[in-house]
Figure 1 (cartoon, helix red, strand yellow):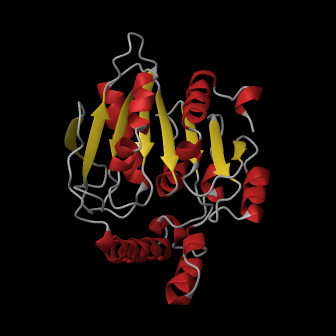
Figure 2: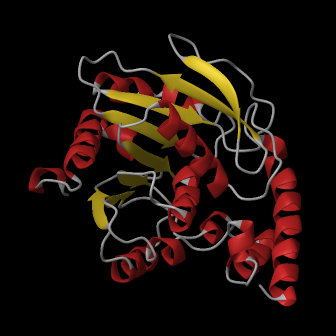
Length: 278
């Protein structure tokens, strides 16, 4: 690695840490426990961050695998999957379900700079704890954005991946002002990899031989049609499923049973049946 590249990497890390501490000021502090029969614990991530994890064991007589859920950018983080009963639905379908808070959410603190490391940290723990069971990924919005970058680093822990309402670029969340200009610049600069702001097409097109399906709503304001078209062209191995009359993060909310059936079918077969395509 050249000294120039090293300097860029250090600058990116410093920028990313400062950026996260500013952006996450509004979400830090949600430290509620998950109710019900759920195991909760802390683990140390690859970058030294303490990560908050919840584990819901399936009571099925025939456990099919482990599901790792990556949460959207909401202050209650992993609680999203417990509040909307998605975790319970997949437990009932025969999967042990792991949820975790990305660094900066809940009890997860910020030691490193890359969110993708959080995904691989929990996946590595799952491999050790549930050796022999396939590990599947499901990421919603922010969580899916960063898991795509994790896949570009190491896809080996995973058997299949579902991306739900994942914005192609972070810039879609910033409509105007200095922050929008800064995000457009940083996400297309040489610092984008270090800061985790690189558009997902760059990571997705690197991932070969792993079943991936991309769910998106046709009324999602954060999914520009031209960006979806580019993803389809650049990532021919990824399957795309459009849901009618669904906005951002509304696919599960408005189609719960169909959603669970489609996802579990994909986990089992690595593809969707014609009935599961829309």
